[in-house]
Each structure stands twice: as structure tokens, then as C-alpha cells.
Length: 290
Image 1 (cartoon, rainbow, N blue to C red):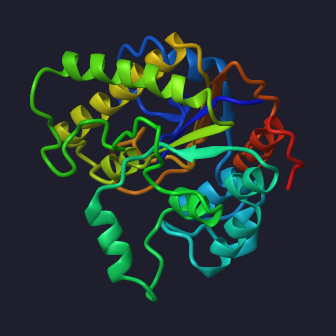
Image 2: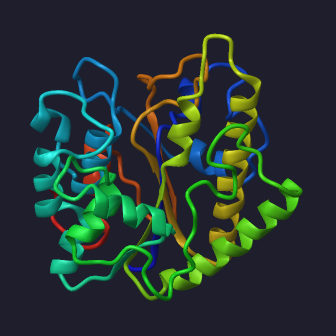
């Protein structure tokens, strides 16, 4: 299978496990029907504690139980144990070994690379997705891919609002989705690491902050527009998440919520958790399960 676009949400629990009045409670004409028709996955893997991005994303990327390997939920960045797992068995690495083509469509600004260089030799600060693609010998900011910032046009910090009318931003994201769909025809896998949803989720509080709720709702509307553009241009798309957070802004931490696994033009199978879903992804490309 070729031309799969992976929208890897970070910290977005399934709407079935979200409280009333959450970021999911709004019109999302493309995203919500797709999620509702998909699977609802366990992210805890039977281990106490709150699921984390490091182990959760490693499960998706490798189809291996990274939580069992670590003996705990761990994150946000992969340490030495998870780095070895990603270097040996992540989807980009395995695709590259099999002669496949993969690309990470995130836009990384110069300051990101400067921070990596200045921190060389210290604790890794790369997330699982950029680490895995680099482990596969693939560049960040790859050529011939319409790169996309993970904030989807929102401001990085409070008040998060972006200048201009949101409608114009949504239209631009739909067009960008179309451009990504066309670029995906030249690769087997085009991934987008949408980590900003988790950052917004960490702004939660018992008395739900109105600005955080508004930003979270806007972010999902932007994902919806991006997805609409992708599907409108005929892309195969998969949507998943590593753990819950943004769906419940009554807390600033992660949650025990199940996570979505949804897609168009792909066979989702019947996975029950994020490890099994990672194996489904690998199977689409003819790669054996972990």
C-alpha cells in the first residue's frame, strides 16, 4: 500500500471518554464521523499510571509493547531504551530497509535544529516521530513535501489566538491537505506529528479555562479542515493518538481515556490497543508484526 497519510494526534482521547462540553462537542463534519466509525483503543496496556507520549508513540511506531519494555509509562521524549527500540523496529526504519519511502511532513524551524545541536551529548529532546525518521536516515524538512507546522496556525503560547479570520485559516488548511495528498502519491507513508494538541491539553484546570477550551476547539476545527482537504484529494488517511489529555480540560495532566484509531481507504482491522494498532499499520506495507 502506498500514499498513506498518518495524522498522529498527541494527547487526544476518544470522544466516547470525554466529558460533556469538551473540545469534541462542536460541529466537526469530517473528523468526527471518521472517528466515530473507527476504533476506540486502550492506551494503558494494563499498567498503572497515566499513559505518556514516549511509550505511547513508540507502541504506535513499532507495534511493540514499549510500556512493558520500560516497566512503566514514560515520556515525553524517548530515552536510551526507547531509542534502541525505535532504531531497531520503528515503521520508518523498517520501511527504509524494505526499500519503501517515508517522509515526516512537519516543518521544523531553525531554532529547533539549533537546540538539538546545542544539546548534543545531553538527554534527548526529540520526540519519537522525528527521532524515528532520523534513525531511518530520512531528513527532517524533506524536499518536495508541503511542510506543515504542528500548531496549524495557532500561536505557540497563550493566548494561542492567530491573527485574521479563522475561516481563512481553515480554507488554507484544506488547501494544504490537498497538497499533502498529492505529495503522498510519491511515498508509501507521509506522517504528521501533531504534538500541539497535547500542549494545549496541559493548560487544563479544575475550573476549565475558557481560553484553553477555545484554543482546543479551534485546533480540532483545523485538524478537521486539513482532513477534509486530504480526503477531498483522494488520500488514504489514518488518524490516531497516543494518550488522552485534550479531551478533558478539567485536568492539566494526561488521562486514562481510550484513544481514536480511524481511517479512510485503509483496513483498520480489530485492534484493541495501541500496540495492536501499530501492528496493523505495519501490515499495510507488507511488514510483519512485532
